[in-house]
Length: 243
Image (cartoon, rainbow, N blue to C red; front, top):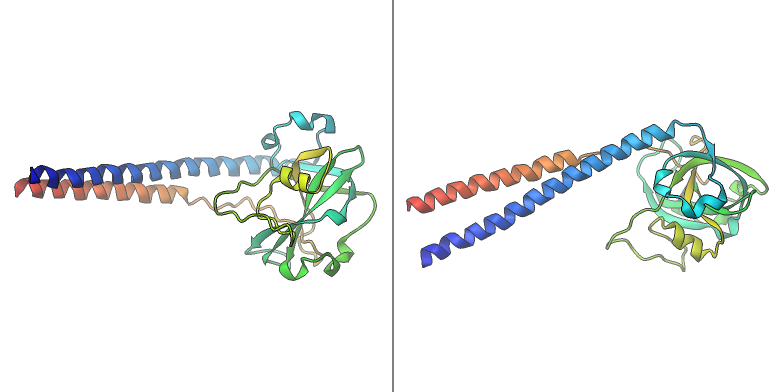
């Protein structure tokens, strides 16, 4: 009875551990395929010429994901008083500023009606307040270009929005629009493009399509550990039988 118990416990541990390692490896393979397809999608779209935004009357029927990263242009006026700050980290930049700071999101009132949120670019923490960069708040009608972005996912570790200090931690278009009490707003956001070499703030967002894709390496690691576990268990079983 003790011998059976001695063999049963390691066997159960082996089966559970092997299942976990294989599951982790399979998940990383799926992540690898997802990121590969994402990079291909971005590359196929960002080189297209900017197109006018979809008509306002079609917004409710749109699938924003089908428009993600498409270059667009729009004419209208910024409503600077409703500026929203999205916390971010820019590790490296071809322009002047990087590090910890915020994406500055501002409602853009379109000439033909409707409102679209626009990510005007990055500002370091010391330039969070509007009064430190008033020169960038051009009044009147403007035509802007950029690319469409959809919602950003959140998880259990995403901090709650700090409404008091106007700090957001995830790009949730509906939540931002409702907080600003916007009506007839687009279900997507425009990441405004521009000359990233200028020192003016906000600093236009750089579209980086060279996304790191290490998931295949992670998958090989998990599968390798699974094979190692099998080898260890085989040796253990052989020795226990011999004894």
